[in-house]
Image (tube, rainbow, N blue to C red):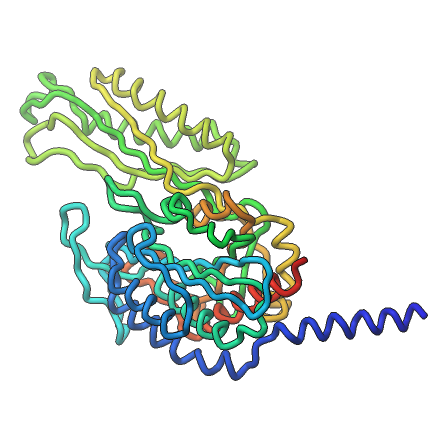
Length: 426
């Protein structure tokens, strides 16, 4: 009798599961378009909060599929809503759409030649972090799911988010503004999925971590006030460049001597210094800008507190003055453990067990974290390194490259995660 019940149960589950699976024909039919969209977007990148043409391209595509569309969300964001043939829960899928102020340096046929103004400077613009692939993948997911509404028990919300790299100074933007404007409401989202392509992970491989996955990112600005004098008479001035050097040196001792790195990683990086106009003048002031990365809230508090103390005290020790401002850019990207456990079998089915791997936390930041503070989320990494290649170029660099052959797995993963969650949830 038990064997009979077991057989019936397995047959029932198999029947339900078979209703979720999209045909390989539906996937293969969209692959060429996804690659085409990715290359068009790559060749025409736009900076944060300025993604006007990208948003128009996305909106036109979603409308052509019969998907309900809202534009102008968080300035340039696009949101699409696809209701299945049967009622149920709501899944959100997110892709970021902005490029970076980086001048592209490679031999791609679709290399970006775009320039734009960024903080008063003319810069090259490049999709140097793979957001073009994320956008194209989600456009592909929308097309596949729109053709399979009969397999959807519930609603899928497509979130195309601007300004993941950070809004320009003085502006709001990104996931935080989208949340503030109610992107997770009407209809209320139950869970959210997202991915990030990675140049150092081989095509065909998916990596993930349950719990804390990516670091909270903060931006800091340190302003140092000294006293100007002739470069030949430093005793008549107070050197803000010297003070800046001492501050940078001091800040690194917070990481090397105060942060318990056996618990979680932490980073303080000064990425920009501005001071002076001439070789023989000690300037009056200096300004430093940088980033803080933490994976633990207590450690973040320690780092922030000690930076504030150290900056002012070091400047005072050299007869100058200094102030520091710290701005939150992203929270800790936290993968809900229950959701991860529930959905990893879907990734195993799509990519193959041997190609779904766990990894350690990384100190890169993601404002996907702000969605995860509101609803359970699962954010994973998709391989983009060419098969057989052992070399890769880091994200945010002029030579960054992604292999288009990895995009279809991204489409399949987000599509099947959505269907499995909606159709198997009670």
